[in-house]
Amino acid sequence: MKKSFLFPVFISLLFIATSCGTSIKPIGKVNMISTRNIDSNFDYKRIKSYVGISKRDLKRTKGATIDEAIYNTVRIVPGGEFIMNAKLYMIDNKYFAVEGDVWGRSIEEYRGLQVGDKVQWVTSFGGKKVGVITGFIDDKECLVKEDGDSTSSKVSFDRVFKVR
Image 1 (tube, one colour):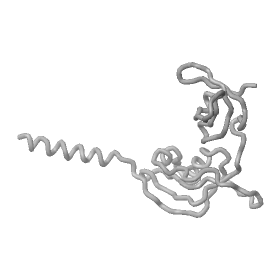
Image 2 (image 1 turned 180 degrees about the horizontal axis):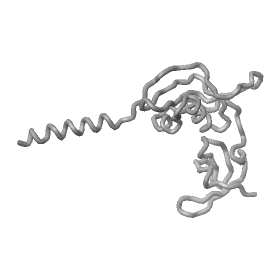
Image 3 (image 1 turned 90 degrees about the vertical axis):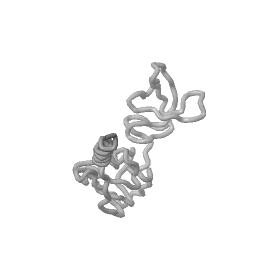
Image 4 (image 1 turned 135 degrees about the vertical axis):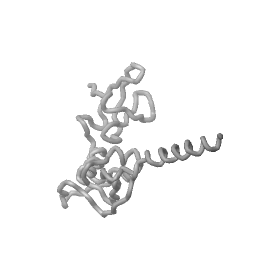
């Protein structure tokens, strides 16, 4: 009696587990890809390697078209202009995603903030901290070195504001 009950349950669970996963299929590789005009006289630099390589990044940068996926991947890197060594993916036979090395202009300013600016932010516990911006991670976070500390930590742009 127990065997006959467990077998259909096992088959049902197996079917549900395999059908709920996200399907990510590689569809091609290209040397360079961009949705913008590139200035051939400008000396671009590799800003960040392997952008979009994790499943989380692929889902975050997916787009309904290849153009949209390229734009989404480039925009998460401040100063990004184009992608080298790009790999294109199809997600769930519905969306596109791109991964690769983002090249562009090495920037010292993003969202009105510059490296070296003195900023203040509110911690998750409601306290206020003051520090200096030491770099930019992506379109959501920057690195800030708190006054009196020797290391930098990640802080969301939504929580940071410039002080004089």
